[in-house]
Image (cartoon, rainbow, N blue to C red; front, side, top):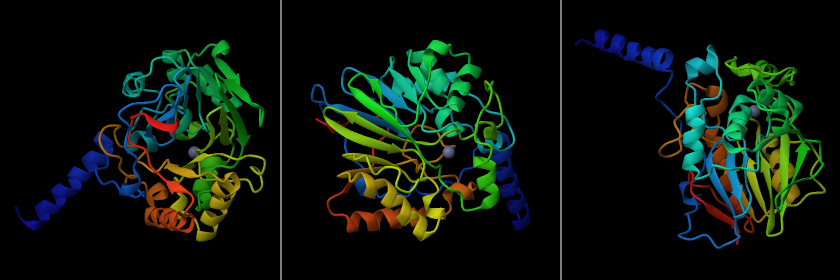
Length: 338
Ligand SMILES: [Zn+2]
């Protein structure tokens, strides 16, 4: 084969992968240090508060009595579907994701906001587990569009604590990550509300942001907070502290150094945890098997600046000797509080 034919073949293969298969093969590296990954313990002490991580911000919490989930996002669509096609929950992927997390009954499923990578599958998770879907009015409309009964939907009030077994969850309205590009920012964040039941399949951007929350969770054994998106509202968390912070870092590297500092100050700085667990750093299009990979290189919006994110987290780990940084393995049960 001469060089011209080789080049044409290579381009054809790439076009085939992107357009037909919808899977762009080149993923960036995850912007976290492999040394940070904690190992799953051989045994879980009875009554311990534990977490399991699927990827992005999908987290399963348990104290041995009550289990509940953040997001519950298990469907992974290819770039073609995300970009120009339509998307909706993949029930088989949700079943497989719940099985991988060894859970079939949940008290609640609570998306951090209403974008597809957080809220799309939550009603199907609720349908399969009996969970109450909790969130903003936009998330409620995602539930209604999927046919979830009203009795299984609860709209959260800003800063009003909700009991989930022995867990007390407070949803604090905050800001979504601010995309540096004004056009992308407008596409993703303008017209924030889903005003009517959303019946999938729909365009990715039909999953409007809704209200972006920070979750503060108090349990008799300890407290934690979940930042699903790297956004902040100055001063909003001054009345809250947490032992553990789950820190969403998606897109953070594409912002300015000042933005990253402000985000850290308004999240970790405000809550004074002893442990920080970065989340939302893995691909939105890769499968849920195997090691975590970073964003698809073609999704430059999300993957650009991954080096900045890693550098930023490493420098924060160095500056803050009292804070341990850890990342979670996929699906395995990790103890937060014994
Ligand atoms: Zn989002």
